[in-house]
Length: 387
Image (cartoon, rainbow, N blue to C red; front, side):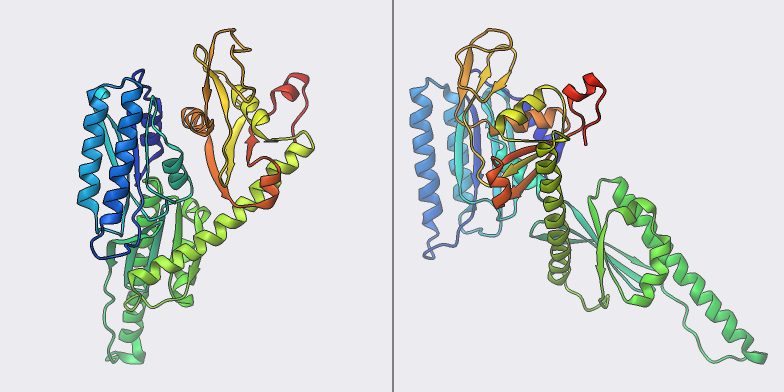
């Protein structure tokens, strides 16, 4: 599981010796049983990275990190269930590994003065953690779903007393036992609701409930408001019979439906706000200006967004114009082949949400990049309210 804080820490590293090594491993279906394709691919990537690094005068730490990555890739051959991201900088004493679902497009290797975070940030931003509660009147199974992973976290069991024939006058004993059963079931639902609240407090992004209709009518009133606000939906199921894979399928269906709806709403809000001079900006120049003004609440990236830019070596100003000197402080600039990583770092430092839109024709026309604003600085100065 990748946290925003871990991303932020990686984003802070800058190596003057260009010794930050980033490796993304994407497992592929092998063409033959020897599984040698991946080893050959990684070896070629390492060889090319070494050639490039030595041409730039990099030190022995880079070579050691690249050799270690090649050894790691050799150990992973034949393991086609997991992807991996590695961030290494021997000069700074950094070696971080993250297991990833099979969501990356290809195996990649970079050596630069900063880590290449865009693919990892995309995974983290597009993969909310979902807790799924499968509940009946005396048992609950709790699962965690993240991307293509699912694992059973816990089980809550509150056995109900078994009822028998009444031996009391007027069925008194039977009625008493029945009330006791109902009270015990209610305590069970409260226990489940309390555990879901604890998961919310621990940072769970969303919830899904699987149960029968009669169980939901008793469980739903016990759920805390915070849990209800994160509830994606529910589905009908029998607790004992459902498999982990069925849990994952149901949760992903609901997650995808909600994510698609939210992405479309966000695109409409941003593009509409940009058109009416409200709380939206589209296009690289407008987004960079909004970032510098501290206006941005949420950043939107379209599929395959890519753009060159310049960054000031003194004040860090980002500019879509390829300038030799910084318009903000007059110092020299460096050219960025792709500005995406620099923007992602700004977002991480500024606690700005990042959303990856994917392929969307309307957003592509708007420049594949946009921002939902907290406010508009130009309108704040004149007392106007951005709509």
